[in-house]
Image 1 (tube, one colour):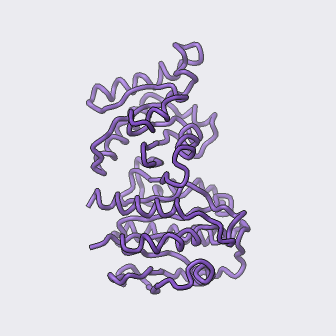
Image 2 (tube, one colour):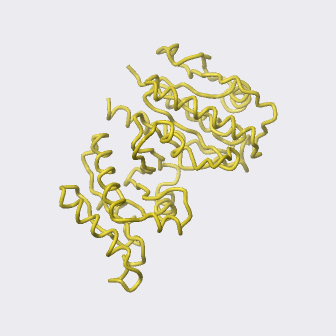
Image 3 (cartoon, rainbow, N blue to C red):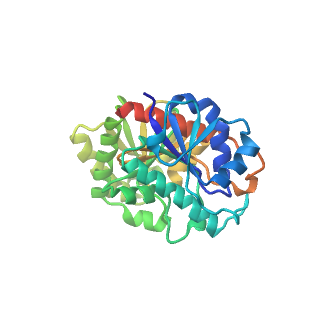
Length: 323
């Protein structure tokens, strides 16, 4: 039987539903898809981007069948004030409602995976740090991680949405030991046979023997040594200026990046539109495209669905690996 996978509509003022609807024609045979949205938001996007789409409204995932249609779970929200291309508190709250509902259904076992369309953190407000943190909090995960899977290598972030100063302050040998073990465990969970982990250095040239800082020598290297001694295939810290290309060329399978931009700049440059955001540590599979709400082109039909399509295909692949 095909897996049952939820899709959140994302911020209704952005491109989320547009890229979902543009992707569904090719991904529909892969799973039983349930879209979490409001009826008015769906109809506005369907009329523009997929007028002939076969769909069926449901009140609960238990109503899903094997029919070749997109199932839509209507959350019944009022979106009369939401406009394409405009950030608003209302659109942020609707995006959060979609995310919360899908997360609850996944935790109940009704969904094997959730694919999330982009949201805007500022529109949601209330100290919302991102969908990764929100879903992990809902699930009560003691450990979770933000990863990006590209066709040639994977990146896992040691720190996520914090300032660079705060990220550096969070780094410790114990944190890296736990993270390396966690990454190896998650790769095993998803039955990846290739698990060569490379730890990216913090400083230029991995500190150049201490000339440019000792964090790589005093913090990262002991963690790598400890985990390698436990049988994990891990090495480093490697100078980050060449490491990502080495991974892309096949030398490593996963790079652990110390902070957000060091990891995401190369993976988005190398695999723009193909990299998929994957949350590690959840009791279900969660993926997302590697782009944002793109308010500047929302509602204009210009959005490229490649990232969403990759996220949907990745979700199907990862569910198949753990079943």
